Amino acid sequence: MNRQSSSSFSGKLTVVALLAAAAGIAVQIVSGVDYPTVPPGLIILLAASGIVAFGPWRWTPMAGVLVGLFMIVGFFGSGTVSNLLDPSRLGVFTGFWVQFLAVIAAVVGGTAATVRNFGFQRRGAG
Image 1 (cartoon, rainbow, N blue to C red):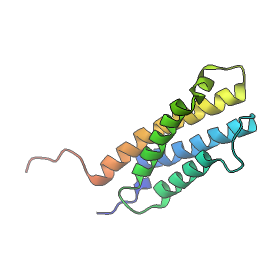
Image 2: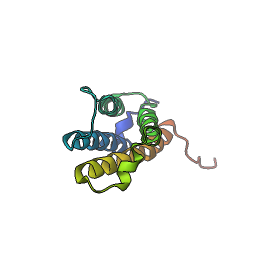
Image 3: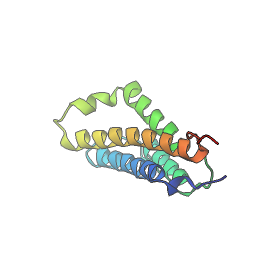
Image 4: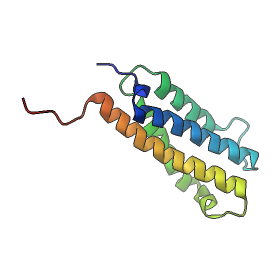
């Protein structure tokens, strides 16, 4: 059974969360954070949101989970997590918080959508 991943609330949450995380990166760029000319995080988030939104396969919400986990690891691995604790630059602070919370929501929503799509539900006794 192939269900489109974005048809459920959790699938829609995943798409919105990925787009919100991309918006967080845009806020950071406007606020002066040094990003490459083509920011890879922004491209990855937009591509993943497109896959989750338009992919007809049951596994597509996993793209949101994997990208979300990748971004969370990136926060800590790159040392930029300190921006979450420094409100002196309001735009940077806000952009990082939006991105951080949105990728957490993408992981949660993508996991719930994947579980729903694969039917890992409690079956009634027959």
